[in-house]
Image (cartoon, rainbow, N blue to C red; front, side, top):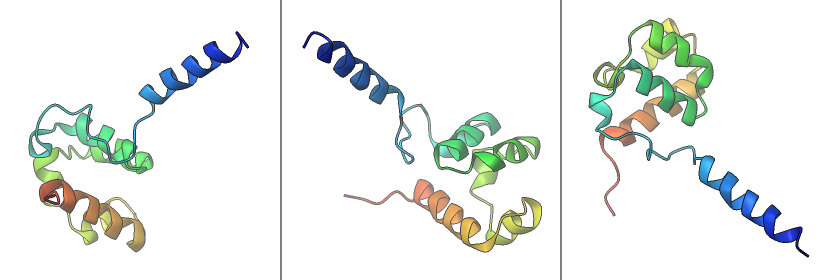
Length: 100
């Protein structure tokens, strides 16, 4: 029984460190003001970590991220069409978040 409490508390501690894919809690300013490292971190959170180094090497910051189109992602970053379209949609929602 005493075993149960520490395990439970470990689990809740673990949850605090695991972010949701769309969570922006670690970013303190607007996406258009992100530097290349913040864009790279965002890609990792969204499940596009395999492209984060390439984005960083190409100096893709928040402003340039908003200028990206599918053809850039497919030609420059060698993305397939599906992931490229999905990432463009994610970026578009960053620029124009849904109002609730």
